[in-house]
Structures are given as structure tokens and as C-alpha cells.
Length: 238
Image (cartoon, rainbow, N blue to C red):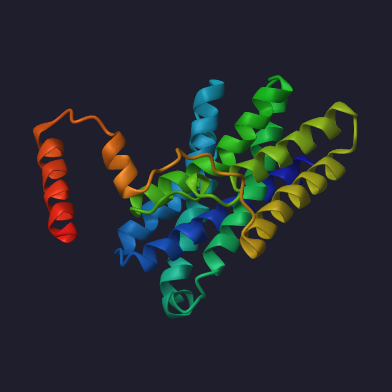
């Protein structure tokens, strides 16, 4: 199963790197920009995970195959640029969902191998799946998917919990991996399709008149605005 986990990790790098390339194309970046977005998406989350867990050197330094996989993905994407450019808007979230599921499982698995507790392993899995996409979106000047209303990090957390629970119950590794992948990917794809979201807690906003009358005249600008509103109301009454 060690080989299976390794190839799952490589698959996650390819999928996430491809999502970075797609976003770079839509943001009209040059080939270097495509490479940067592909790299930070493909290995960014795992790098942060290793740094937090104290793994030195990080995984792609000891195994440069990850870097070659990213370079190959970008190179193939440049050759097939016109095909990538024609992909629908919905392809990026779907590709990102697959990468999220794969990296969540890999991050949780590696944290458990290093002897962390179940809670830490779940957090490391979520970081591995989420951090790279966050960096990618911020570099492309987009609101990161994890900060939007749709379920994203919650799906990664659920997958990590399933993996840790099954491993604690001594379930076969293949079963733990499969179930965690299904849960994470299923929740994320369901959120994309049906726009599922967690409840949003926001401050109650008052209508303009009520908000203005309730606000203290703490600044000259507010005082002048209040005077202008009163004068306009008087003119209307006349």
C-alpha cells in the first residue's frame, strides 16, 4: 500500500498543478506565471504540513520527482493550451475537488505515520488539501475557495476524521483511503452541484434612516451629512 499512497500523492500533484495552470490561463499569465501557480498549488500545502510537523527537508527536496511532475504538467498544458482554454468554468472547481480529496488523505496519512494525535492528523490533512489552493487563488487575486460560502475545508475535515477513525478501528489501509476519498470528494462535489453552504452569521444591518439616526455624530463628516439629510426632508415636506 505504500506504493499506492505514493502514486495517489503524485496524482494529487498533477490535478492540483493542472488547476493552477487553468487559473493562470484565465488570469492571462505568461508561462512563468503558469509554472508558479502550478507549483504552489501542487506542493504548497504539503510544504506547509512538513514545516509544521518538523520534517526536514520537506518532501519535494528529498524526492525531486514532484518537481519534474509539475514541470511535465505545465509543459503538456502549454502544448495543449487551446484545449485547456476551452474548458468550462466548472472544470476548475471539479479538478480542485479531486486534488482536495487526494491531498487530504495523504496529509492525514503522513501525520499519523509521524505519530501525531488524531486531531493533529485531521488538521494536517486539511492543511495539505487547502493551503495550496489558497496560495494559488491569492496570487491570482481571487477570493480563496476555502473562504467562500460553499463547503470546502469542512469536506476535508470530514474526510480526515473518517480516515483517522477507521485507522483507530484497525480497518485495512485500502478501506480507510477509499472511504476518506469518497467522503471528501462526495461532499465537495455535492456542494458544487447544489451550492451547499454552512450558515453565515452576520451583523444585522439597519435601513439607511435608522442606521443614520442611531449612529453617534462622532465626526464632522457625519454631522454634516446628517444636517444635509434634515434639510432635504424639510424641503420635501414643503
